[in-house]
Image (cartoon, rainbow, N blue to C red):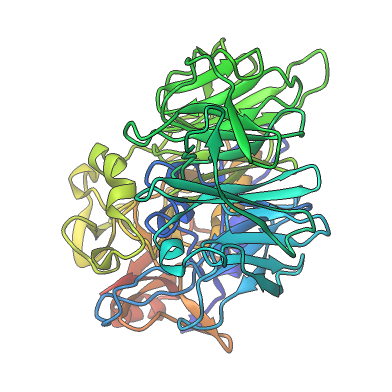
Length: 576
């Protein structure tokens, strides 16, 4: 029996395809380390420090030269006594224009503190360090991901009050001052703090006042703070507190001591984020659950644009004059693009799920963020349709997958899906599917199957990519991989290969699983997970088309190995 490295197998498959230079629509590529899970940066923060309203808008923290993305490698299974199934264990970084990812901050054990970093609680410091905020204070990280220092901020307040309060964020820099806030909704008071020495010391601790002297509650359930267009003061996106105070857009130019309302009452309710136009300080955008609003008079009056869907993120892509900047919006069902906010918007969703997304321009690299993870589109040309998701899963995605959800790591009727294997003797192919009722003629069940998570069914799993060639010109076979690099490499080959030549075509993300872990060069599945093995027929070397088989019982593959098939090791792992 011959064993083969899966990457070598992939390369041997790829070399059988005749590549030609061509330009086709690209696809959003998944950003994730090979043996980790990048599911749900918007999910695992929900219920810890982020509201359900704000969760879909979360995006990576952008440092001076890189984007910081969250990951986990904690795959504790459902038969453990620990119900805290998903813990965001560290950070990896990506440096534009490269799309390779590098571990930056690692948490070595499950007993170590969580590292929670996003654009909702982090900001670049004046000295190149990164400042990360929580109710507990501020952590300072170096550009290499080293924890330098922890600084208390709210130590002048009663600890019991602080523990029951929310962070008014994100942190904002105005001139030489950094700002962060804390709000106690139950008690009806709001505090703002500022630092004039790059976060070393903090001043504040006074309740915030509106211009009429009343208390001003800014909130903690959205992107509440930002610098004004001139960079001379602080703007506040004031939350709706069920009638407990002012709402709308407010401004302070005296370090948060006093506030004045800017808008004329037309500021949209349920605005999750405010974005300034990079080309005109008079133009401002409000991202609300009613759609994208625009103000052309510095936030005074607001009008709804033609994008009338819930909007969670907005990025600008500069273009050479006379072309206008491209606007890229993350909405409730994907990504939309336009050069005119009141003109036509076009979907750019090839490779994304039909779920809420945010969007970030990370130093020239476009990153879409959703409960499915991080995705990048290098040429802003990923036009195409989204992968459908059942409506109940869309509506419940942020309600049903909080920080602690034991049922997600364990297979349940709500999260499971059965993967069934079939064999076609006419073409000597094995295939597997989550939709056995749609399998074609002459496909016979082999009796082999396993249970996996359905799409969006897990907070510890990663997405499996499914590829298919074609009957002609081929290859007439399916290939499944949980490896982001394998998936992205085949996507790149698909983009470069004309449709009338042999190539692998991305089909969908059919289910979720866990990647095999590697220790001392040896693959294994985490404890309590079932191994799914992969066999490969080595077709290209024998003048045949490639074929694959995925089963949980390794002994089933022995007859194939005796016929010359290759043991390709562990494909992925599924919950027992």
